[in-house]
Image (tube, rainbow, N blue to C red):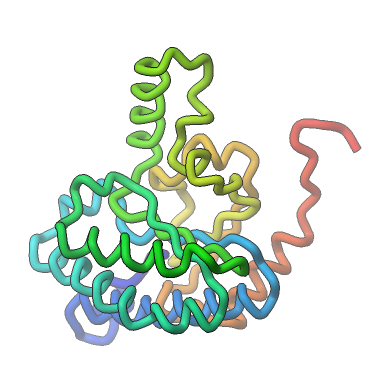
Length: 214
């Protein structure tokens, strides 16, 4: 979900205003997934690298997570959405972790769309923690120890990257091995229903062979 800061800068505003508008895009796309019957949607909300951003921006983002998880809790229940948060939660504050636990517990009964929020996450961290768990337990494969696998989340079919950037940026490195990528120049705060449908149509036109011959 890239381009929040640039969106705000273009309008002469602080970066935090772009993040606030980006939340509305998350809300719109999540609701559209419910309407379309899409079972899983993930959002790379905050990477491990994002901790290196200016302290006021990081603090503002943490506040946004807390406020919007609580505000949307009733909507999650109404729309039958299960919320999961994956990442290095040891780096998150007590208040945010408490809110995450509450919302995850409350929505765990929902059976419709699952929304996965990646907060304080990076693909390298995920592989490293999986390797550490595997070594500690004497496992023979890293894959079962990835945070998505342990949470029962399937690999992504398609990864959408906004704002004209064309890189994976340390997101689900292992899980994205056979994902399709859709790149769009649209900044995330402007990415709404029409842009989402266009991305899905592009994905639907792809011929996925997984290394095989059809």
